[in-house]
Length: 311
Ligand code: DHB
View 1 (cartoon, helix red, strand yellow):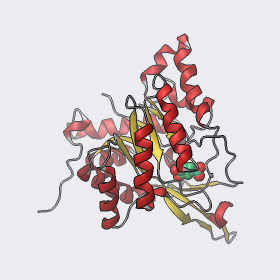
View 2: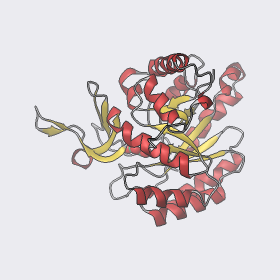
View 3: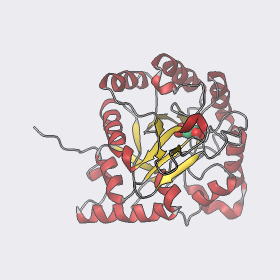
């Protein structure tokens, strides 16, 4: 059974070594996505930038886009592709997440994809990084979002998948505005959702914030965001032409099942992989298979999107 479970961008996917670990046959990922990249290398925010509370399955992050620059993430795929002994590795799709510091930078990276189609299966254009000081999330500015999608879509190779990583929406009018913009374009995939931006975790014992940047404000992930993720997955499944990739709050197979029931075609794991390591992919895959067996489903298409409502 092919079940697509893979990493959420940002989670253990910044260096070639980390990407390779995710890509190996022994790692139960069905695809791999890179850390969000800018055109040029960045150091990101000063630490501590990440904190987790495993008891409640919750995390906060504010890395500030530390990454090695676009070319480094293409070079990873080139190395795999040209290394004959790694032939078996090339079965997994590889996506690069792009999150340029400006529209112009995203356009530059989009243009580059035309020469990289041999190595690259797709781009996940990140419209929802909450951690750059002075830079609001594009996905909450519908005018900027429309322009961003239009101009990047124009430049990206048609031979690869074009996806968007969306922030969580909360108000129905915002779902509608975002959905209407997305439907203007050929958008192959929507990853719903990025972390809940600008949350605050507090340590009552030290009476302090738990991360340094922005006086402790950062992106919240983990089981606490699952219901928001499911709502976004389901809305965009119902109201757009794109395939949905569910992300947010998946800590067990049943959570992945819920995402698929709401319409997700694949799911990404974030906080749980930070807490448990790469074995989380295998555990959650096996748990999902067990749930499906119990319910006598042989394929995710037997239940995908078939969430029931009251009359
Ligand atoms: C970062 C966080 C995000 O949620 C994201 O989408 C991209 C980058 C970060 O802080 O590095």
